Amino acid sequence: MSGGTPKRASEGAPVGRRALLGVLGAGAAGLAAAPYLQHGWERFLGAASQADPTGLTGLLPNPGGFRYYSVVGSVPRKDATTYRLRLDGLVRTPRTYTLDALRALPQTRIVHDVLCTDGWRVKQTPFTGVRLADLLDAAGVRPSGAAVRFTCFDGAYSESLTLEQARRSDVLVALTMQDKPLTHEHGGPVRLYVAPMYFYKSAKWLSGISVTDKVVPGYWEERGYAVDGWLDDADRHDRAA
Ligand SMILES: Nc1nc2c(c(=O)[nH]1)N[C@H]1C(S)=C(S)[C@@H](COP(=O)(O)O)O[C@H]1N2
Ligand SMILES: [Mo]
Image 1 (tube, protein in one colour):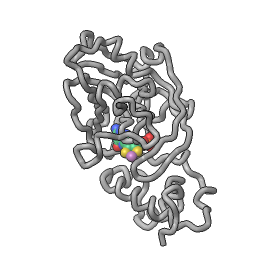
Image 2 (spheres, protein in one colour):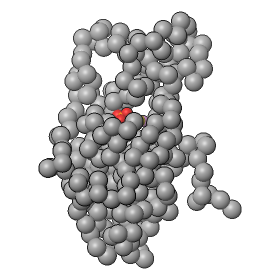
Image 3 (tube, helix red, strand yellow):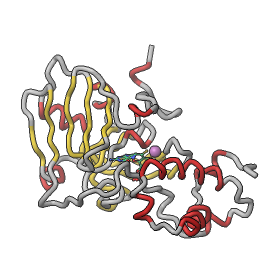
C-alpha cells in the first residue's frame, strides 16, 4: 500500500487531501479549527500520497507544494497600518518596527529547499527580508544575551534559536516568499525564515523577538519536537570542531 519513497511523499497529496476533506464534509475552515488534528492528518496524508502509483497528484493544482499550518483556529490579519514587530529583552535599545520600517532596511534574498518534518518539501523557494542579525545589532545585544525567543500574533506559537544561530546570515525576518509579499496564510505580513532548519522553526505571523539568557523551547518543542531543527545538509557552524 505504501510502496513509495519519502521523496514521493514530499511532492504533496492533493488527491488524498481533497478526498479526505470530502469524506469529512469539512472545508479549510474546519481543518483550521482543529489545528492539532491537522498536523496529524498531514502526516497521514503524506503516507497516503506514497500509495499514488500513477503520479497523477503531481498534475493537480497544488498551492506550490506548501501545506497551510496553524496551531490556532483563526489568526487576526495585520497590514502595513496595524503590523508591529517588537524587539526587546536583553538588548540596550528595545525597538518597535512597522512594516514600512522593515521594508526600508537592506533586504537579503535566500533560495533554499523548504522541508517540513511531516515529509513535504518545496524546492528552491526564495525568501526575502531583513537579516535577523542586523536587527539584533541595531538593538545591541547585552553580554548576558544567549538566545532569542520568537512570538506570534496568532497568540499561541513560539520558537527559539541560540544567539549564534540567530546571527547566521541565512536567518531572515522575511517579508516575501516566492518573490511576492507573504500572504496571511503563509504568516504574512512578516514571518521568521530559518533556511538551514526544518520549517517549524520559521514562525509565522512574527510579532515579537526577545533576547533571553537561555533557549526557551517553542510551541512544538514543548510538544516533543527537537529544539535542534537542523536540516541534514545544513552547514552547522555551531557544531564544528
Ligand atoms: N505561527 C505559526 N508558525 C508556524 C506554524 C504554526 O502553526 N503557527 N507551523 C510551523 C510548521 S510545522 C510549518 S511546516 C510551517 C508551515 O508554513 P506554511 O503554513 O507557510 O506552509 O510554519 C511553521 N510556523
Ligand atoms: Mo512543519
